[in-house]
Image (cartoon, rainbow, N blue to C red; front, side, top):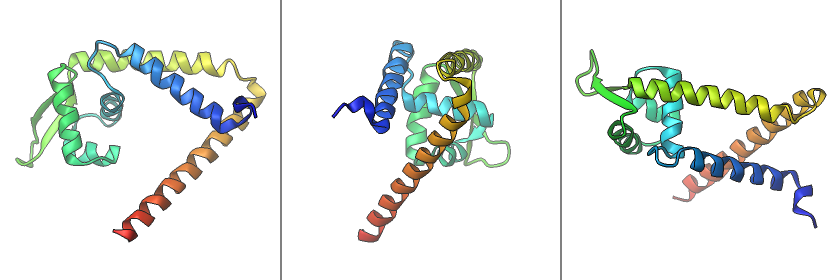
Length: 153
């Protein structure tokens, strides 16, 4: 059987190609996929408490602390006291973080255009619907597994 004939195998190949491209693009920057995800979330939300970032990313407070520590050490983010909650810390992009995210947004838009240009315009809506359906189903399967594991514990 030809693995390229299975759409799931093609999606896995595309996922691996994106991972390898990100690793190459971020080599020497101190950025990882998780750190980059946090930067995207922060760029979208604006200055935010660490707890809000953890919720937006679906990770623990401890995980966010480690990510913010690394991004702060690399100069992408800064922490400041929360204006009304002395127990909380606000995380925001530094000037270097803003430039990095602006560059990433531009590169992302260019890559999106470049890749979608490979798809016939008449097929793009169907591609989008299909990918949405696959992502929705995969999220549901993952949630079902998590729910089943929680019942066992």
